[in-house]
Length: 322
Image (cartoon, rainbow, N blue to C red; front, top):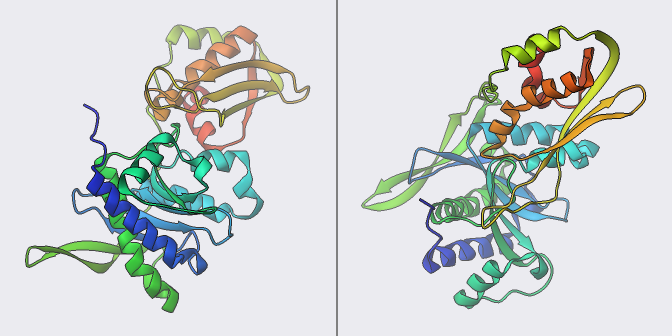
């Protein structure tokens, strides 16, 4: 059953919070990695707020959903410099679950955005002035918020309005004594009203959990074992293409290009377009079988396979182990 869309009242509160954030402009003193947490009062869920815009280009607030999303984001931030514009890093940003409020030019909005703004009677003018709210999910095109997502993002923006001025006065207010300790805004009920308080909480980095690989066909493996070994290095790349595809009325997704090439000659040995459906994890779980089938077609068993990312290496580990 699809989730409800936000009511006009929920939209109004979200736009009001976004407008106050835009007026405050916390990107004037907060960096992207000045992160703090917010506990969702509706469920046992942590989101982590990050402010973008210090570079003067893209003004936005992201609410990263959960500890895994937090540490994925921090890992990308630590890459820094030119790496942040690398295609691999750019693709990884779109794979981190988050809710985002951004401030765009009018031309970036969709009809659905403009309809809500019109119903609320709001007016915006100029570049980077039009609020836009989106859900980011791994492998999927940024999409419109559900009712519960709108409420959580609203709370996150409201808590930013509380935390940001304190960070301006003392940047250590969001820091714990250890690297895995963060300021978290926690709800409390006082006289039947919802209030908020600061807590320094330990948020340990989750252990890496790869998608459970699809079982490899024993006959396919046996056929691979019989192939002659070659010393040629085969390069394998799996990369997201920033060209969304939409089937019927479903949410658009980003296709992934799988490519095999000979490292010495650059010759393309095979390619395929994969879909992150029903999920990105499910697509990656099928990767060992896909590569095994290509190697069988090539009729050789390479001693070395080179990949560009740790994620692809982990996905292919079951095939390598065999």
